[in-house]
Length: 215
Image (cartoon, rainbow, N blue to C red; front, side, top):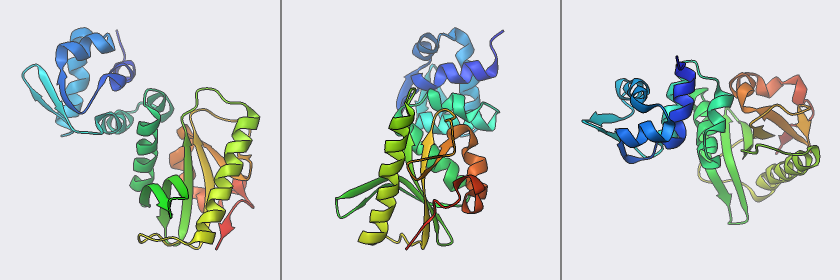
């Protein structure tokens, strides 16, 4: 008996925006006819439409399906490993938006600075670099953390636009797996499995004490 978790995780990488042939989805996911059980959840949630043997899915279907899988109890860390790095960014942004943050993705300033995801809530910003790394060394993590902290400093130096305003910001790396510590290179390290909890306590999180930057 294949569990619902396994079926979701098997199907996620196979989904694409547009037309999805059900037989091909069954072969790609190695679920065969059981793929209909997961597809039914997508249809009942209004995420996609089933017309005969064809699933009609919107762009961004993998992220939408990932969020549905999480609503049905699939672990966010397991889900994230089945996504592309771009999907991983979208999932991070969606989780933050669901927690009440206003979101900017791929934010650029004067073509000299780009940030993966910025979430703002009442003058406080989480400035996030999403690292969809399967493997990494402590030194690689420190370097990424240092670079992210420098990006936040530059945001304050250059000024922000496009309706983006905040007075304090926390540089954050969101990663796939738990790291050895909560901080690296001056940035807060958050495994995606703990992202939702972190978002709710980020402003006063003791583990990242002293990392907050203010403009």
